[in-house]
Length: 77
Image 1 (tube, helix red, strand yellow):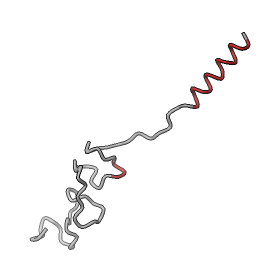
Image 2 (spheres, one colour):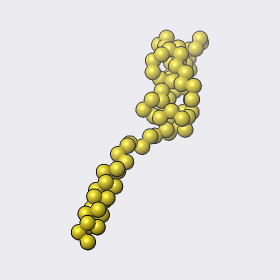
Image 3 (tube, rainbow, N blue to C red):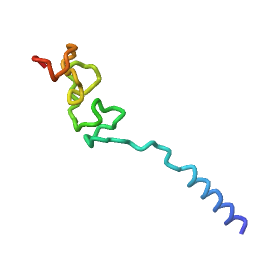
């Protein structure tokens, strides 16, 4: 009986030590790029285009070409 109890305790400890400690991956826009690596996590953009290389994806960037003029009024994006 003592051996069975010992095996049970070690088995239980082993199972508890195998607990999954990973952080869940979040991909808000479902573009297969997790938010922490996505340059525009609110809008689907799997290509991650970033014309001015400012770290903000073109679909989210208010100034796509980085010339200091917002896209809304820029005559040459």
